[in-house]
Length: 370
Image 1 (tube, rainbow, N blue to C red):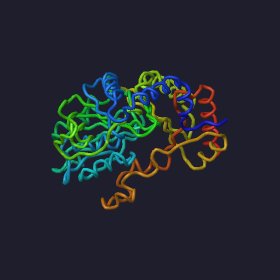
Image 2: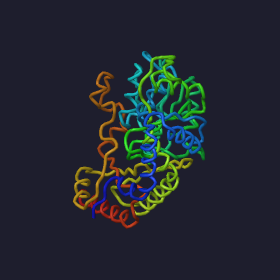
Image 3: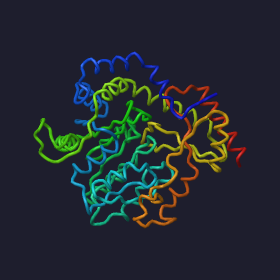
Image 4: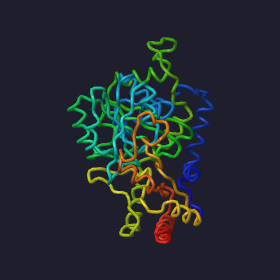
């Protein structure tokens, strides 16, 4: 058996006629930049997300960078982020001239340890970016309380959490804006780079739109200097099709995750993911913790099962952030988990029999590597 970590071809084949027609429609209209499919997707995704405004941009990293700039974040400022994430979030902070300030992760859910935020706040702190990691929302109630107490912006990173909810509300409603990635492997993925910013603030949406399109809202009238980070029409057309399936795909991921929970529960040496009671997990990734991870990965590979590691090196240990002068032990949870976390395949096209094969192989690999 051969099971990839994600099967984009299987997904494409399941909706091939609609995808092909959407792409052909753009080719027929030749409106490759600023085409009609973009506005259509922005409106549809706003309705799905429960937001008033959506601005399509070139990728998820730009979504964060442009939002920070639109909120006035710049040189001399500090922005708090979790340490156990992909570098896109922190490098977007650095791109504004601001400084990322790291916080350890919660040991149960992998999201930011809200209890560690206040000790990192200084007079230079301007914002908190909670990352809804692996598809699980951060603990937003206490985080919002801290932000309000210290007059800080909250900008949500939902690159992995399309459709996830916290206390019955979709992610994105808890901050000034929420940033999405539509990288191909995401729950809602394009066929190239793509991203979006969603907000209920019309002025903020306009500022992001200007920054993403050379500082203009009208052609050749540039109110500010901006960037070139536009969602292209073909990607928007693809996303329009896939958005119609997203809710069902998320439910399928959740059903598979529940099946994995049942299959893996109670087995020594395997820590399955936990979900906060007040949250719904979108399961972009299903991340377990195991000992002797590289041996486990090797044994799974022998059985045709691909795995991933999200993420093997916490940001404070990355060479890119050596100037921040962090040391071993500064973020003990992230450091303890980094050599143990393992992502196993989970995607809507995965069958129950494949899930059972994966779980059985994982249990066997953990026993053999003990």
